[in-house]
Amino acid sequence: MKPKHLTCVLMLIASFVFMTAGCQQPPEISGHTEVSPPEPVKNAAAPLQARAEEAKAIIRAMEEVTDVTAVSFEKELYIAPQVKHSARLRLKEIREAGHRKLTKRWPGMTIYLSTDQKAYMELEKLEREVHQRQLTKSDINKRLGKVQEYMKG
Image (cartoon, rainbow, N blue to C red; front, top):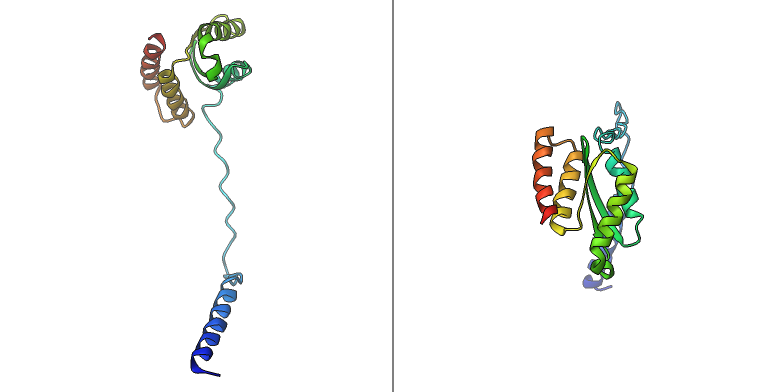
């Protein structure tokens, strides 16, 4: 056998040995205790946003709606659905129908519903931060004021 072939065969055997050695399980470390995975943190915002989640389900059930975001704060509900492109000519009807459904469900609440894209994006960001409990009540109130301005015009 030529030295060149012998070197190739030895390299092939060595790489096979290294590859199979890496596939073995690591040895048990004595005294090592198994660490259990961390328990999931319960969402503290869930009771506060239960009304918003229910409102999202009501609006999402409308056939023209593709996605929806919502935040409830005290006696106010802010909701922004995204509408299918084919239904964009009927935005006013969709807003009115959604508002009627929500007003029927919660007659004593002030409901703000908008199909404006900027309102949707800001409300989605706010909803995420509320669920993560990153904001104080005054911060939420201030941010909702801005969202309300987007909803008006």
